[in-house]
Length: 81
Image (cartoon, rainbow, N blue to C red; front, side, top):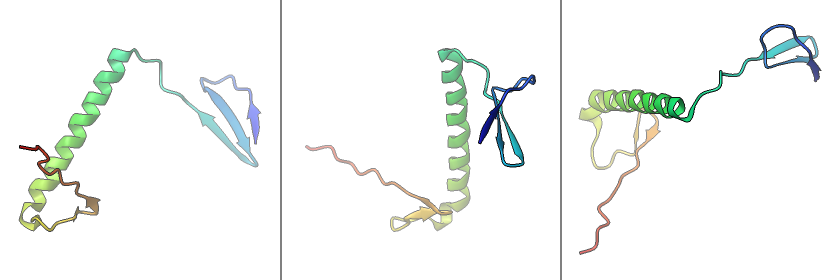
C-alpha cells in the first residue's frame, strides 16, 4: 500500500497494486447537526420497522422469534410488586 499525494479534493489517496483508492470524508459537523442527522436516521428506521410489522402482522404471534430474518427482542414486565 502506498500513500499518494493528491491535488484533488480528497482526504487521502492510496494505491493498492494497480488500484487507486480516493478517500473522501464528510464535512465537519457541529454536535447539534450530528444529533439532528441521527434523529432523522432514527425516525426513518423506526418508520421502516413499523412498515414491516404492519405487513407481517398476520404472521406474528407469541412464538415468533424473527420477522424477515430480524430477531425479535421481547421486553417482559419486570416490575416487582
